[in-house]
Amino acid sequence: MNIILLGAPGSGKGTQAEMLSKTYGIPHVSTGDILREEVMKGTPLGEKVKTYMNRGELVPDELVIEILKNRLQEPDCKKGFILDGFPRTLKQAKALDVILSEVGLKIDAVVYIDVADEEIIRRLSLRRTCKSCGRVYNLYYNPPKHDEKCDVCGGKLFIRDDDRPEVVEKRLKVFNEETRPLIEYYEGKKLLIRVNGMNPIDKVFQQIVEKLGLERK
Ligand code: AMP
Image (cartoon, rainbow, N blue to C red; front, side, top):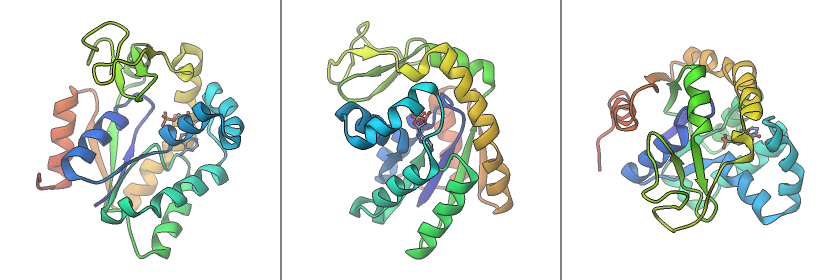
């Protein structure tokens, strides 16, 4: 099963991708996570993309397409994958079609998680990320058991630079201008599944599973 999760920042793509990944045993591929790791490690690629990310802008297509192509060639993607945060532009979507057709694969479904802009702003202001393991919390919807600390590894929780209010506004603008057209693109390919992302996490997951027509393992 090869799935794309589409949605604004903070719509729950990462959370749902993790749940799908665990349930179906296929990797969660997040370009945002890959890029953040490069930034954290201070690699030349990380240095290159840091400024775009901190400003809430998209990293140039060529760079992310290359990263994604390499990641999809790793053995764990052979049994399927869940893409979170890619594609984000029409150019990336078309590049993905080419990458997959070259290896005889295709996308089975594109899940669009629909969440209103006001809710996105509210969610991102309450989002906290673990500095050590990258796990994501929301102080209201899924708070950590202990303030400021990760339940899983005890790492310190922090606010992502790009979750600051002024950057969130920019990221939403970028989503509406650059990524929203992909809804129509995948609707045209009869791949789009819409779910109401305003619902609680478990309900959204249930909707996705039902609409994908998947059997639980
Ligand atoms: P995310 O964690 O998916 O919200 O991504 C965080 C940031 O990484 C974005 O705001 C972009 O700067 C960058 N990024 C992640 N995925 C992509 C992509 N497919 N194309 C361009 N930039 C991306």
